[in-house]
Length: 440
Image (tube, rainbow, N blue to C red):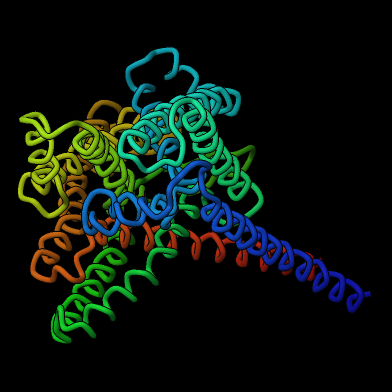
């Protein structure tokens, strides 16, 4: 009988392991569908003129945005907008929950409230996708990059681009539900990884053509390795706040002694959201100015637009200053959205827990608020250095200059760490489930 139970437990454990394999296969299949869709072009595009445009605008805002789309923007595929409209809509909704009482009430309603907020996020995604699709289509048409003009181009192009974004949003939700990891993050990760081969090839070609030296390539590689190591170290860093429970806890007739635990506060509570949102905001005015400058006749206004584009290009001092300031601002802002010292202190007080040396209630709230302010400052400086330092270093290695290398490394490493952690959680939970069955 024991052998039968043991074999049954092993079979059950294997079945749970197969579930993890099926989730990973679903993730790979979804990413494959995404990459295939990124090669389907928008109807009515002059591909030759489009290639000339990107070749003339290397290492500019277009190349930065093209990196996040995994090359879909360069091919102007139906997924050229990528998942950025969804990210922007999600962040806007999260910000509104802090100032709109009705949305804040929905957030506290649990699962039903989250479904309603998700519905608002999808509606906002559709609105932003249509708005961006109209802007891009109008810019392409005015720049002479289309085979047709008027509504015969605008209507199919806007529908294709907006539909591509909504499909990516749906695909990301399916990955989250049926795959491993956060679906939206995995799509961004796939876009960044897809851009890596072209960057390596460009570096090799510049080395062969004598545009740069082997020493410069080595120095740049060392910078990338050091930045990656720093990201891994800081993302795993935590400030553990000790938490003690009541001296005695009684459950039924049993009395338990005092329990000790800790409240883990991540050094970078905002994750990659500030860098993504700051990049998105800076891309919008500069991209509009770049498209508008190409569409108007030579004039003083066009000269102003061209100067604005140059000043707000990645690597320029004004761009670096504005970019770093926005990252710091959004680090504090987003951390305040995801972590509420008031709610945490109230939960601790209701559960009979307290921070040693700090009175429960208002004093605990002030202590946590002060602590998070200092922690967030370190996290904001870390994220600013990671995103800005490669741009500064890139000025000395123009052949290897990649305006988005810091953000790309940050997103890729954070997503990969989250993926590994979720796989480990699956394996651990399956192992304990299997052991519990065997012990039966």
